[in-house]
Image 1 (cartoon, rainbow, N blue to C red):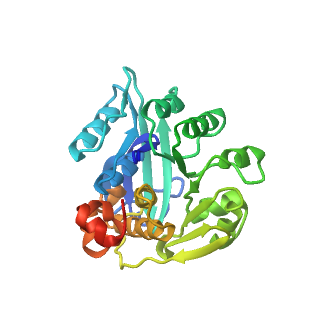
Image 2 (cartoon, rainbow, N blue to C red; image 1 turned 90 degrees about the vertical axis):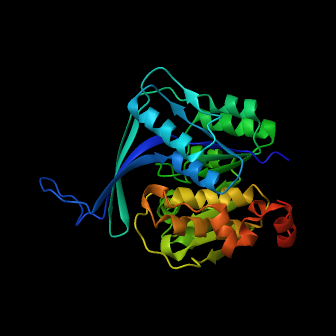
Length: 317
């Protein structure tokens, strides 16, 4: 069985101003407690999946600019799988400035005007078992991605990120009809559905997507499947350093377990743990390794335990 996970999502360089004393006001200066600069965007997904010891390849389109070179160097340093990287001889910069204050985040981003790669053709060439998209690619490209997944038998998972579409929009309904798992945070889920709480939003999305997993911060997550919703709490105490990238690490925990056929509750448990641990560092840099998770949660990472550990856990992963 092909367990390769193909990751779609833009590479960004994140400049994170953490714990500003207050939100900026026009004409006034505020200071952050710390500043860090590191690759973000789908780099965090790719890094987290690499640390979870699963077969994942990130389709990163990089240019000849300093930002692209820094992202490539960071991937090489971490040992991230770069087999699906695309290299171009022009600038393809993507930069985000993130500001955090009292657990909330704000972003300003920039990217060069660039033509996106043909993701559907990449799916046909690599024939992965799973495709995880970090962001909803609106319009015809998404339909082409979905059709390519169907052609090769790949299962499609989506973190919609922030987008302007709502479920009363026929275009969104059509796009969601191709998705097996959707992984929004609670704000995104409520915005997409017009609901005022996480449970109602998960139920509303469940009318269009078979598996709905809603990230709910320190409250854990909601899993909605087969008409039922259950809450998966955070099982560990965490010290929050930075929440940037926590959602990406959450996604990677779910995708890794899903690709190894763990039950949906276990997939969500691993997602919650990965997201919770990641807030202990900046920009997803604290995403956990499978070997670390295996100490306390061997049943959630059976593929990392070797043959004997997998047999003991009751998984064929």
